[in-house]
Length: 173
Image (cartoon, rainbow, N blue to C red; front, top):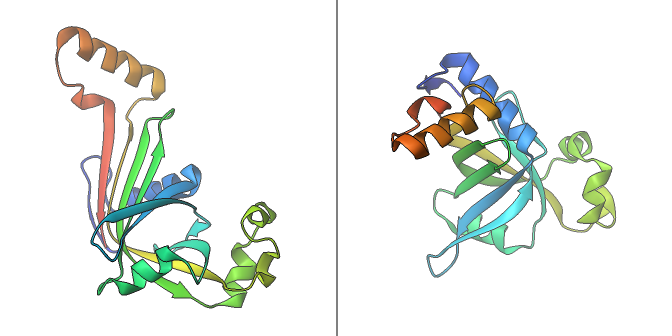
């Protein structure tokens, strides 16, 4: 990630905050386009956002999500992170690639993944899905949940837009 354009955070600060949000929220909805052109989303557990900005997931190679990402000429995918209780949201437009890197898998695998991969790293067909972000945006409370809630309540009463309650950042890669 090199170029940054942010309403409230700029440069390295926006990229660092984006990484914190992506890794803290954990689950995302990965969106691909199916053979009929429909957008299809499914939940994925984020393993990490590395220092280059790539976001890593485990999956099985023989899945629709992999087929759909690879069938797209640009391998375009979308990621939507939502922390409704904390009012934190992240949107990532990126490009997905399947990665067969056993050392990286060992580095990222944790026992909680055994729910999906019965034999751990020995599960047949287990691979990494790497999403390289192209455009990212995030929104989060500017002053914490209580102040944000109060600002939204005030906006309901006054019919004003609560513009100052959320911090927004945009990162172009």
